[in-house]
Length: 128
Image (cartoon, rainbow, N blue to C red; front, top):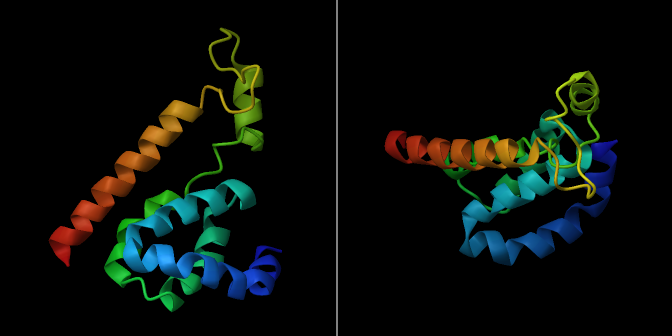
C-alpha cells in the first residue's frame, strides 16, 4: 500500500524536496520521521523513501547517519503495543493525555530518535 501511494506521488515529492535537501541533506531525516508517523512502519519508510532520497542526490553516508529517524510510529499513540501498555499499567503513570500528542511515549521517543540520529551521523562522519 505504501509503495502504491509513494509511486503515484513520487514526482510531486521529488519536486517538493529537491530544493530543501540539496541545500540541507540532513533534512531528509525530518521527512523520514514524518513518513514513519504516517505509515507506522520503519521498513515501509526505508523501502519507499530511500530510493527517493538517492534520486535526490543525497550521499550514502548522510542517509546512513539519518537512518534512525525512520522510527516515528510512537508519535501518534495508535500502535497496538502503545495501547496495550496504557491498558496494562495499573499505576496510571503510562497514559494518553487529553490531547493526542501529550502521551507518555512522546518525550522518551523523541529523545531516543534525536540522540540516536545525531550519534549515528557522528559515527558515520568518523568512519567515512
